[in-house]
Image 1 (cartoon, rainbow, N blue to C red):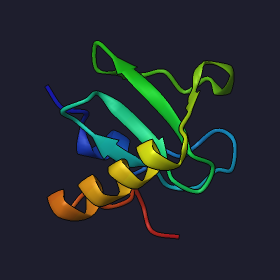
Image 2: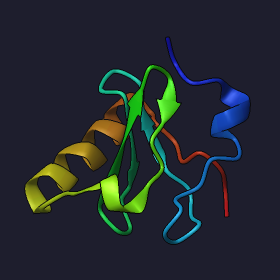
Image 3: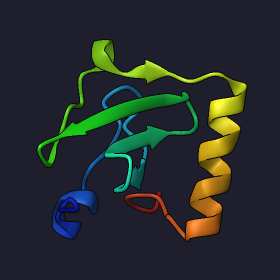
Length: 78
């Protein structure tokens, strides 16, 4: 089950307050600016900075390409 669009419309990174990319298949939210991945557990985003995963170059590139290929857009426009 995917996150509700109303939630995605307002969901921001707790670190830089910017938009996120939502990957429903891998249950993750990703901030490409800071390279932070937040997990989603039981349809609840875990938006704790100290529990986010920092991604390296290869993982970052993979997620950015996947988002582009799948038409995944940021949670909101700045």
